[in-house]
Length: 228
Image (cartoon, rainbow, N blue to C red; front, side):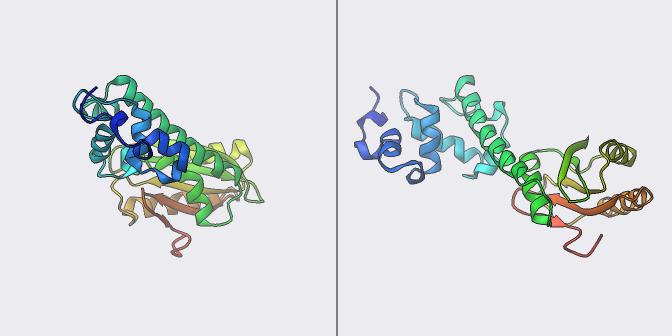
């Protein structure tokens, strides 16, 4: 048994035992990760390995979810199986948040739209543009990805947005895209696109309620800022 083995720690300090005795809320992020990692290396415990994994993301779980398989494999003690286990746990957390958002599938405010789309967009490293289609009671009919882009932009075909709206008999829609950079300020292209979609949709008696920009930490609403 190696020097830093968790098995040599006091029972109350071992992550699994601590989980059983005190519940998951009592564990730190690194202790929760250590349980998933299960074992360390001959000279480092699972907790030390977990702390190094967290350090890759500056101790930020949101940033951790952005890491790729190759990033996790740079940590000594993390092989493909453990890396996939960690990525799977993070993906399940994301899907849980998405399921909760879908349950509240009526858009009554920019916060509702943000809560609905954040689980989809928050961890992406490239821009994606989505449209949320609504009926006349503002209930969500569908969420549709319109385009993928690069780090700073994505090309949006307005015809695709409106084609899907007509197929769904939608009476309103919310535009949404992410800024991987974390910048909340809309670009000139964002403003121009919003106006073009709004004008085109109006010809079909479809209302553009909002355009939401999603980042890891916050959001920008055109409607809340009086810009739509």
